[in-house]
Image (cartoon, rainbow, N blue to C red; front, side, top):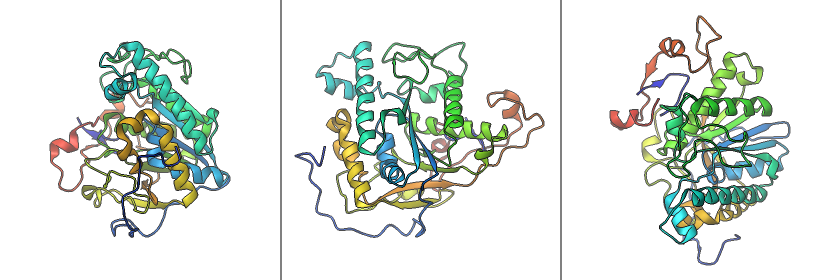
Length: 357
């Protein structure tokens, strides 16, 4: 499978027991440019996309808190409720018998945690939207389950439609077309000046697929001559990539630095320094995700550092097509675009093509 160039991507307080290791602050790696990205201000509209409840805090919690206090309008969109995490359900229910109803109950719990975390960052409940799509299923919706004639069924909840009353659209069938429609609808509603989403080199299928849906929706809006789409800033954040970040422990005096294999090439890393108040708010927001901290506490707190990392993308340029009315899913559109494989230096070809579309 290939990546279509220019269109689609690859595919509480510090609680007792969590102590910071003895570390000293060090400067960011030379691979990170000394400049910092644009800082949101009053009048900006920031939309942060996350595949699961907690990704928005891990990747951009400091940015969200800073943007809110700068007077920007901020909205968080969460694709799934994280209701397919087997280990989390086993630990949460103290059982190895995971039933569909338990997965759904787990998803509802993660929604409540997301609202509590949002409150720590200065957001109200109505500034968080849950799309309700299947956890560990976004890559499938991006691929073979694109068409809504044959909805995808979650192997965890055993549902092919969202069972959540807090979903953006109630009982919406699980298919890629619906995901794209929802993302485009929310972008139109929020008219963002800054979009923050998952990085294409994230190795979690839900993560790169969420980023792909966001980029496809932005491309679609640009081709429809939506004015703000011509100047929107696009930042992407990384969550999963090998053993990154290191150390996997609460180390607030350290900086996040890029994974070694992503320090060069097309990735334009920028450091976003966060003030102490933003860092503290981010840590408290992470700890609101009690179901996740119980399983991945050290890893999650390793994101509470002196900065956040964003790949700052160039402005979108729409592909020139003979028929600008073609929908993004039309095969004719795919046939007219150049196909490329986007890899990173030193990575094997098979890795570059994994998770692409």
